[in-house]
Image (cartoon, rainbow, N blue to C red; front, side, top):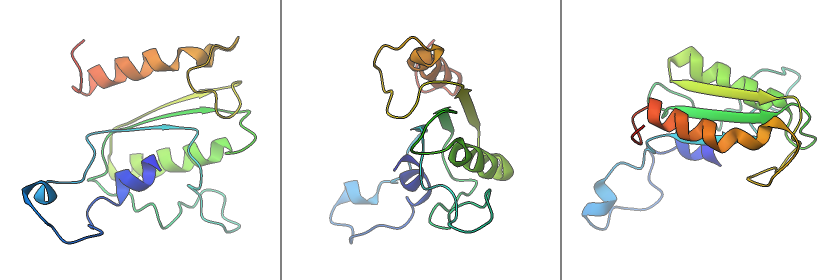
Amino acid sequence: MVAAISTNFAKRLYPALDAADKETCRPDFGIALYPGHMRENTSKDFELNPYIPVTKQTPPTFLLQAEDDPIDTVKNSLVYYGALRKVGVPVEMHLYAHGGHGFGLRRTKFPIRGWAQLVETWLATIGMISE
């Protein structure tokens, strides 16, 4: 969902009704944890899904994934990272060996539990929050 919103913001789904609807829908940043559906359903493992049209206008993105995620493989994060880098979008990616899928903010014995602090640091480096 984060990737879809970050890349499909230019086309409105309804006519503008007031001044608020004339504001941009582009997010200031994206934080994608264990993204899915990033790859084309073909034999090409690292081809981006065409419904995720990455451009230079895609906002800065933070990616986080556990390599042992049984639902959304790490290839999803890798292909999105590659697409963002290719067009020059600032992107930071963190991959962890363990954490599975759906780890969220719950406490675990794995280092992935510290991801929220990484996001906070990243938000400061891109100027979204003060350090």
